[in-house]
Image (cartoon, rainbow, N blue to C red; front, side, top):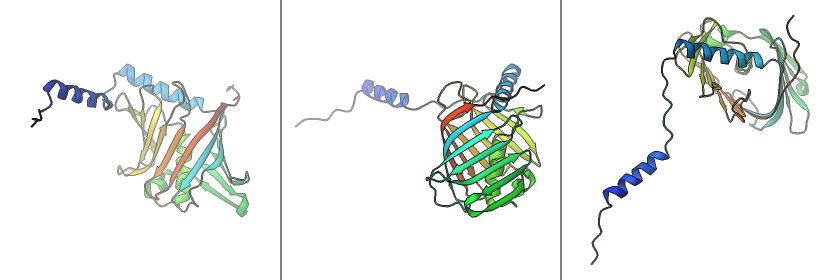
Length: 241
């Protein structure tokens, strides 16, 4: 009759060490030094300026908030020299199903296949109160992603996080990775209630301006947009006189 021996202490320690090696250590956030805070704000501000002239080809899937079946559609995004945004979404057959133009606080949404046009305003107060239309909320979210947020009112909360007031009680909370690339933007109202969240992932390179994947979630309406970037290029932007 054989006697089963308990595993040796050395083998147990080896197994424990192997298990620990498979677990990614948590990123520790700490208060930023004045130099680190300046460098973080400067890096984020430079990224905002660099989006001028941005041209992105991607596939977009929208679900919830009255959206149709969650099918991926080809889409093209452009940001002009003044920060104006143009978004075109196509059907799988190549027909334009949506065109969105955002200029300053105004936007025009055109649905050619329905022969419909809607004009609206990027209203942060309505966003914060939850009184705007669920479809409008996703438009406001898209506008805020490309709206310059970095300014003198921003507060660097740690080496990885920045909070910037946008007005009407709305704050943007930005989180970056070790390369100071945005990985999360969370927007809250005056009461701290979450409005929507944007998650960035799959940067193709260390210095990539645009992430390979973007997911925007609207807590109030349940709307969700997932964009997968196919191609990025920069158009020539006239230098300011």
